[in-house]
Length: 471
Ligand SMILES: Cc1cc2nc3c(=O)[nH]c(=O)nc-3n(C[C@H](O)[C@H](O)[C@H](O)COP(=O)(O)OP(=O)(O)OC[C@H]3O[C@@H](n4cnc5c(N)ncnc54)[C@H](O)[C@@H]3O)c2cc1C
Image (cartoon, rainbow, N blue to C red):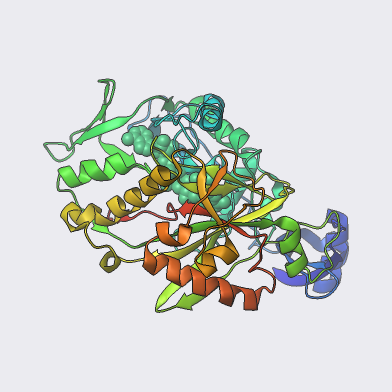
């Protein structure tokens, strides 16, 4: 295999034939001796005239390192069952892995199928009502369905990322995710992908149950006997092996573990706000004023140490919208998602500060769940300040100056905003660091600290505040 770089105008998508000829030149071979070539990575270089830099892998006809991805899902109707609790990304991919290993996944999901879920999600805005079992976090595809679908990790610690990307493509994601430096699927494509994964599980003999909330787990009394998995409607499932894939919003599962004195560890998470700018402003900064219609919406990634803690941008959504991702009726929690085109008017990102166990005082009585209760209390405080799902909001400049905003700019958050002093609603150790960070971010991205930038509270579900240690 030989890797080489090719540079193309941002508006030009090279054909396979073009790449084969370039590969032949790079390898010093006739085109007929190039077995295959594929783009490993595409990255945008907007330092001067915007271009795409492609990293291309070329394989000659006698190259044995060429890896093709084949997925051999077995018929598992009669195979040993494994209960998978949770139909988010972890539960779906665990189920696909079981199919490949010849075991039968029995997937239990508390929420609804992706279509019914859309109705519940729209009710958050239409009726100010959160279905606590079917929302932006719970339901088919978990928190990954209505998201940006960013797939940025290139970590090889837990296996081959490309295997996951190829499976996503197999189930309906766009092929560009195999090559983009920052691949993302988009909230308009993800529902089809997760539905196709379910169809594959069922087609190969697996089982998939919606509206099936697990409320208790009973350990096998003898080695080699079965776990009992109890559901809220009284159904009981049994299997020798159970995979718990309930995600970080399933607080009731952590409470269950704590009640049973099963191993749990408190862990730090990150807390802050969602910052929203006009996408045109971010394009202007990142492309140095050279953005044109047809160019991809610009992204950003910011990180800064402030007073011994990291303040960083999280889950930046170019051309995206802000969504109410609470799982309970009396809380305000925001997250961001974007469609595959990322063509919306706004750019949003979490701007968060890490929170460690020693920061949280007054929650000691909750033991290992102290940080989780702290997280919950902040979300509920946002709701009681606003009196609805409308998000407490403040212009970035007013936040930094410590004054309430007299007016708020338009924004993408459908439940609306209400001018409130976020600098007081957030814990002081978070608000102070964010304030300092915004000034420093502006040095890296001049214009980021702007009168048009709006902050909305609260971004609190960056990661779990509890860890279930691996045995
Ligand atoms: C709006 C939004 C945008 C996001 N954007 C991105 C992004 O662009 N890129 C990215 O990498 N990450 C993103 N994330 C985070 C990402 O979605 C999560 O990290 C990921 O979904 C975690 O996968 P999971 O399977 O571990 O858990 P989850 O996705 O949380 O899935 C857990 C599933 O288990 C089910 N469940 C919970 N408890 C029970 C129970 N007791 N019984 C039965 N079922 C249960 C839930 O209903 C849920 O479907 C986003 C999250 C949100 C909310």
